[in-house]
Image (tube, rainbow over all chains, first blue to last red; front, top):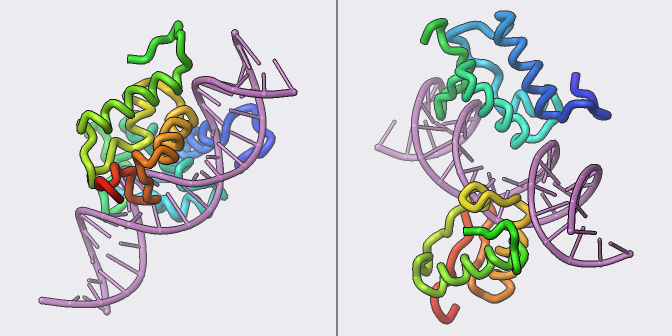
Amino acid sequence: MIDWEPDETVWQQLYDILRKRIESGHYKPRMPIPSITHLEQEFGVARGTVRKVLGKLKDDGLLRAIPGKGTFVPPRGE
Amino acid sequence: MIDWEPDETVWQQLYDILRKRIESGHYKPRMPIPSITHLEQEFGVARGTVRKVLGKLKDDGLLRAIPGKGTFVPPRGE
DNA sequence: TAAGATTTGTTCGTATGTATA
DNA sequence: ATATACATACGAACAAATCTT
């Protein structure tokens, strides 16, 4: 999934992948996405890289994190 | 704060600034100073530059870093 | 009530690559 | 060539919130 001889950086590629999963409905509103630890393992990247991407998606309003619970796709319009 | 057409290098200027903050008591003993990430943002410099300066202040005995916790001003005499 | 597991959040430590002067 | 400075990316430890047993 991640290209290790990249035109784009790792975090940019991961951003694109997760954004598509949200916008395509693969990750559904009101549902938690996989945990940071799970995403690290799924994509073989470091925690910091995952957190950087999730931070940007939060800035975009596409995700909302709740400490101790998980990271959610907000319901539409909220 | 940082002069971008410098007589001194960026890291030297940052060293002077942080040293003054420690010696003036602006950063107090037993208290953590702002994180590396915070200092990056406060001064608009790169992580490597902050780490270079903190490394020198540690060599001087003016700071002590504890992984996962923070970077502290040691109590006097310790 | 207490203890453990899970999850997000934060921190320092380290390495590599690129660009510039 | 060397030093400066930036960005990226890795790892590890610590902390706090939440939930379950």
